[in-house]
Length: 364
Image (tube, rainbow, N blue to C red; front, side, top):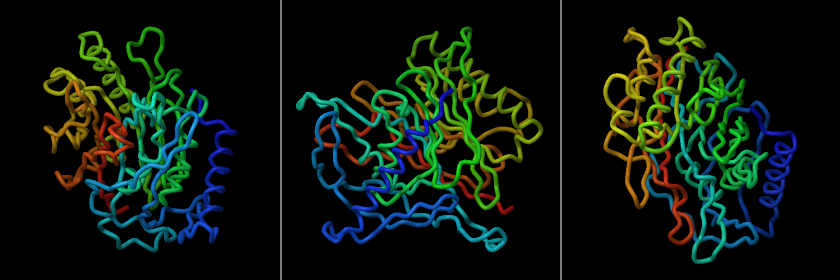
């Protein structure tokens, strides 16, 4: 397990500082500045409409005006008041997203170059007004073409800074990360695969606190492909996840505020339906207590809305699941499947869509 290095952290701070410096120069005529303070709760930021730049390996090109399709209704952020001052709040939403961002890049056949898409990814997250994002297929800054610093800067430039990050280097090109507008209080890898394990990469765990309520975030990217061996690997990791959660939250699965999200690559019918399926195991956690059942939001409420779309097929590969203490009152309006802000030309920003859950936290 490798978390983001000190050098990468410095790069993020320098990049954000540079952007903020530019934002206040009268020459550029920008009217807003994003200020980031350690420990500060997120505050509402105005949606800015700069034309994102498309970065390439060798050049920087001006991109067309970014549009904002399919933007869900805005939510009221959590109060940053000291504990105790917002006790009467009864309808407070935490917006949690999960997205396979396909390395924030794509190959442009016409230009014969690799196009970086961090600005388009950032614009999509800004429009969704996500408080927390769990990413798959993102490059840690230890990897070639690292995305953490670049995406952090792009988000700040869009007026939607997410200054807190946790990163897992999965020893390949498919790393995992959590970006948050709330301070990340704890982070670690989970289920680091041993030689005998059939899954290819670990998961990521991060904990945040919202109004003194601990929120436990688990992000995964399961084995891909539709062959029997790959499906068996997914089912094995689902069982391992269920066992790990039962152990980590022993006696408290019903009460703890837990979100499990990611690209689970549920490509086959055996992944989605029936006892022993990948999703069934993740939802029921392998026990016989119905009070512990998780709710699979997008598959429960929008089973026919694909989260993965390319020229070959469409499928529900991505999921957000919530524990019983968060599932009360959830409905079709609680989960959004969002197409990304369109990239340059015909290049899609990702072949996956962003999942966004609006979660109403109970009163503490």
